Image (cartoon, rainbow, N blue to C red):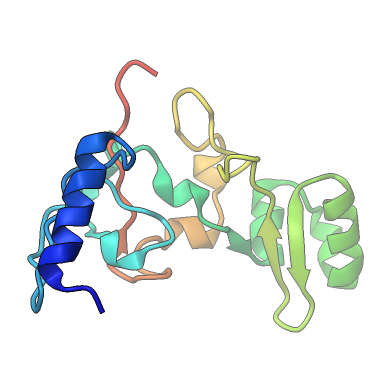
Length: 165
């Protein structure tokens, strides 16, 4: 097994040669220092920051790239399911919504639908330019309850808005 010093030299050499394009890495043998993370990675919950309401205005709407699980009442509120359809078998409603590209999945056991996301993982209801929800007043309970409820309750995947885009 290579020694710590050897690994540090290799990383230093690769960083300086431009082979690895990342900031200099500090290797701590026993205890890692905690550092402020400028932007969270959605798939790495440990990078998420404790939520504060003032964060949303300056965020890139990273929470809107998470899968949005909804129930039939959310779909009625959004306006993609008719009030009369709620009595139909959810499987039939799911088939129609999948054909229309509104949902990507339906879990028959739980009755949960998952809204379709764009190719960049954005929610289909997220405006591409403003990064604001186009159905904010009718948004699903999942969105209303975030980040109190979610992958890491009380934390959000904060990522600062990129200015000029």
